[in-house]
Image (cartoon, rainbow, N blue to C red; front, side, top):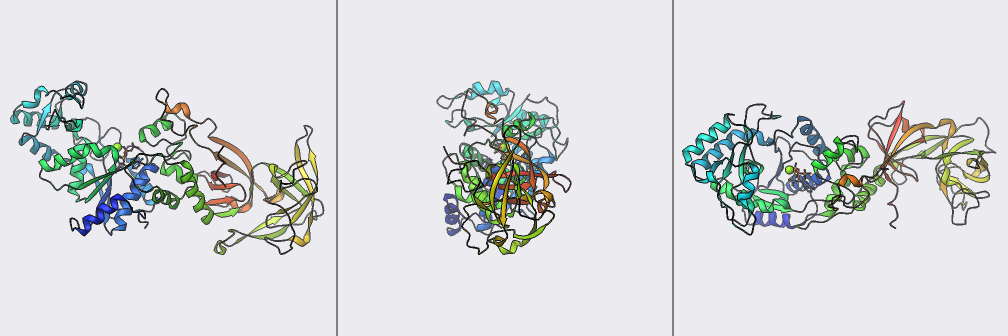
Length: 550
Ligand code: ATP
Ligand code: MG
């Protein structure tokens, strides 16, 4: 499938390693923790990990980093696999679990104790903080640091057997309490947890810390290049220290900048908060930057991969404009989505000189450039719905749509000249009247008629009702996490979802769940999960064009 097409410092490093024969077969991994749904930031990592493996004919492992039993759940495991597949990637037989290495990891931890490179520490997390200190000053050595190996082995075995309460002890790597890198000041590598693990159940009472587990997982699987985000740069010395102490193979860790997008938050913890506090309807709410939310919104995997290629891979933190993502989606949908007609804010158009009970079947192409999309039959009658904004009283010359005396083409049908407007008691226009010219039938008729505008329409007799969900950005400011004295949820956009009733053409009623369309002149839409032939429900993916910047 899709390789990672941009070339950047990571690929330069890989190519140098291949040329120097340091490695012969590239092995990468994508290591999600199953504690939430994937978001578009993960899509960047997936694209990089899987795409790089494809580019260099290597392989990419999917490894669940399930070392924290409390937050993890089988439902996340399923959703993560579905999302990766949907993005166009496959791990084949290379599905792994950190938890299946737990026995090995315990043995490695024990061997560190036996070497005098790890000890069981009784300080609480809080207490240890004051021992650890700050980078510019040396830390203090915890009292247990010089316990005998025998004592440490005994305590560790008791930790393992479930004798102690959570938090009573941790196992620490014995490295350097005066290192300027705080991660090397005797970090915890094993802790006690009594929760049930989604994969191993009640088997274990102790769990490895991420830093201890991750490098061992990479090493066991023979990962050549372990690609991770920049915050792990300061963890790299610890990654290398652990593998060296254990005399294990050490993969090359390379860090890259996270993907951040304006008007979005990415962290799974923050997304969970939005879900739990009902700011959104669930992890797949179409306003969320989750892969499942974007899929439900109508975004395509191709558009997301294109975005990843365009932003490339750097060492610098930055904020990608949401407009770039939306442009990728529009480009893809413009090429791939079927056209159809829907009227979101209908008024009636009555064609005075069209026969009362006649239905004409017009053939309209489903795509303006690509004939392979075929044609559909759209019925035309004396009365149609048109968009309210396509009529204006006393319109200026540049208004190309209906005003009294002006001729406009109905897409794929006829030219109609507007004769009058009808109003309700409040003076609001409820219908307009016009006359059609039978000589102007068709999609692009060679009638040579110079009409200024073309509008979309639906025969009132054959129109169906639909519920349309109009989504806007979930936040009102570019970076909701940037205002330190406020919570990010203070910036949730109250009008990020509007639900309206619209009129749609018949072909849309029978669309399948997830089908994507361009409603002509209106925007990109897709059927929502609860769409069916008795209740049509569409999500607006995006408006047709980016809103103008003020
Ligand atoms: P979050 O911060 O959203 O909770 P995480 O890093 O804790 O994400 P993991 O499940 O550990 O989530 O992530 C799996 C992989 O995805 C990691 O290698 C991580 O570096 C990468 N990743 C996470 N967020 C981003 C992002 N915004 N851009 C690029 N890669 C990311
Ligand atoms: Mg994480």
